[in-house]
Image 1 (cartoon, rainbow, N blue to C red):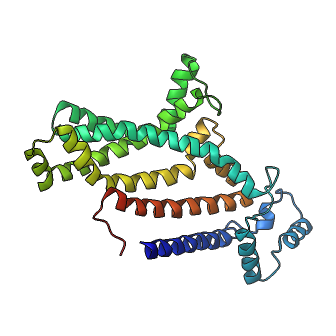
Image 2: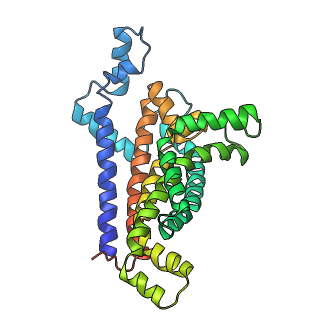
Length: 305
């Protein structure tokens, strides 16, 4: 187990290193970085002055080493649009994104797992058919359309909820509905399919033959053995949410990381983009490690030899 953790932590650093390398070379794909930081009517002298200021006249290996050495210390330069350095600007948006991600994930799991388990237990019934239709619609409806319709109905027409921003618990309702509709549908479909596989296993028939209640069979025996697939999807979705739910945050003016990165791309604030990519790479690698370690807790048959 200890050796496995050491190997995975080493892989985490490799992922971050590769992400930084890709980011460094991507800044040259859109043209001269110095010209992108200046207005369209900038003169050649202005561009050359900016190139000297940014160190772009140095050899490429020198620029690369300098970029990595600064990135290790969290120095991505000053933000062009926001006051202060790029990395603190990114980190200041993380709490808002984390709050929305955790609330959306908890609500999605609280709705999806019972629906998926009951649908599998009552396969072929009216409840199962309704659940299939609802989950398909939940994945098919575009998030931006659902968010706008929810805002139009609950905020504009009824006036019950705020249209956007981050403040009281009322501000969480519409963004959570928008996120839950898609993610709960995915979790419910996966829960149903994995539970159907587990319920056909021999040990489930043995548990029922022992006289155990159906609730114990479903939630103690079947769901725990089906939880690895669900846990994998939870890890995937959580790291995506922590990277910023761009559509939801943009629609509801949520001051999160996804909205910040989108605005930074539009305003060519590449220092913030670089810092955001580093944060997302670290979150992704860390979530992968935590999900892998959680496998042994959910299923004792998993070993890390």
